[in-house]
Image (cartoon, rainbow, N blue to C red; front, side):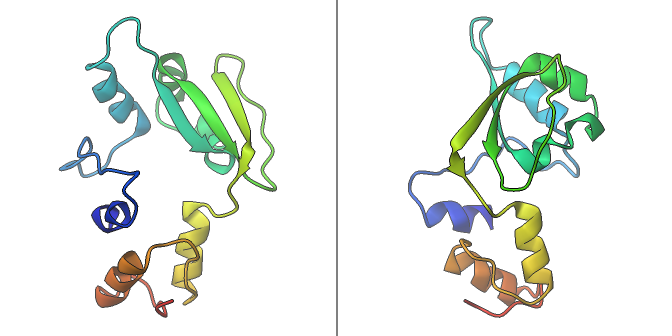
Length: 135
């Protein structure tokens, strides 16, 4: 589905960094990326405010926080306090209403997921991933 979504918008390309892993935690991905960086590089982690609000529940979240600078995209209705040890910048000029969790809930309820490319919606329908009506 990522291949289909990226093919629909030339600004994006698929990363194979997590390919072949059964389960991947953010710290695993961060450590893989860090291995290719130079000491002067800075690693940024772009995340929605809804997911950032759950940061303290992540596996080894303090290690992630030490390794990255979070760029937190505003989501309406999500308020949070950043832990003191976290380097964070807020992106309030971009207001994304839909989160991946909200898209999955819409699909599971049989509603189309707004903003999902038609090719991805067709794949979801063809593989019966959710009881979804094609947009």
